[in-house]
Length: 124
Image (cartoon, rainbow, N blue to C red):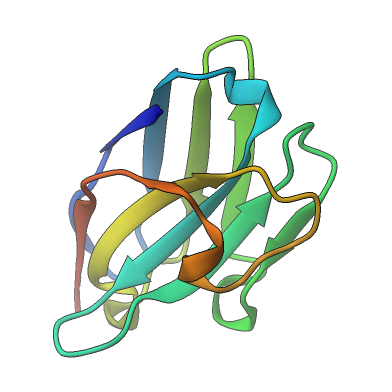
């Protein structure tokens, strides 16, 4: 089992920044690829970013490229999502997820463990 706890969400004005953190415990964190997803009200959960177990494989959905940065610190068992130039359409609950995949996985079904989510609200 891997337990994931997100933090860092909040209310920010458009153009602002937030940094989300996801702390992992349980199994060996460095064995797991990590993903960030988000879900807005009435919408399906959507992929945001993926980082491989070693941190060398990184992928973003097109709508956040150049604005969001995913990173991980395996010594701290933590994955981060730095979000800059936030837009109202970024408003959603953000979830981190873990899986033992060796390739980039965009589907939520490919991940084995999920956090409880953290709310991000961007006002216009």
